[in-house]
Length: 290
Image 1 (cartoon, rainbow, N blue to C red):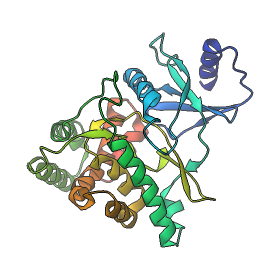
Image 2 (cartoon, rainbow, N blue to C red; image 1 turned 60 degrees about the vertical axis):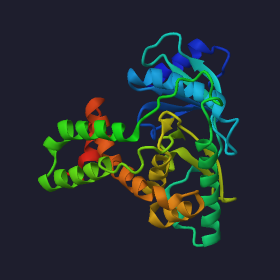
Image 3 (cartoon, rainbow, N blue to C red; image 1 turned 90 degrees about the horizontal axis):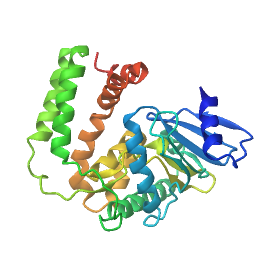
């Protein structure tokens, strides 16, 4: 299967010599291929990912001008034939390794941890400050957080409840209904968000304790800025999350929303599995609710 993607790259960019390549299995929605240890190519796995990759490409063409940490800068793209296996983007590999939670746990110096928290929060402040005008020409999806969570709740009840324990169903219903009944945040301002701000999309250099890049803007949209911190909480735990909240303006005010969004991640993974016939994603997401 991998060879067909290399053939496609060669077809569109015959002048690019491909000496070696390997896959990166982290991507849930895209096949990720590293070419010549220098370039990253991403191919959508599903038809619905094609339009999303187009949107992401447009976002990446602009977002790097507004943030201080490196983001992918597209050099190669193929959208002329909108078919899975033919559509792709390619960009220079950003140096660094995924900032896994286990890497953070090995750091004992609290000042170093705070420095990392400052780097991540600064990036999110910059990202959340990007305006419609800054991304002119990009039709960003503007999500009403309550409507989005209501729709997610309906899907969970319809598609996942049949696979769940009764007590798990009750706990999920209580959590969603409590969030949906809270009207205090209805007038909050949506911002530009990353949408998947977790370990696998945060690159760092452990030798210098520096975040080197933020990748995968496939979930970027207008939404609740608290959603980005849900990825931080999920990846790095409560202590580091609290560090971030102490830096982010009005961090304590968004903490409860962050925790709620975090609680939906496994459920969203299970739904992704059902909707895209991905058995592994479904099993990974539903396992704690059976």
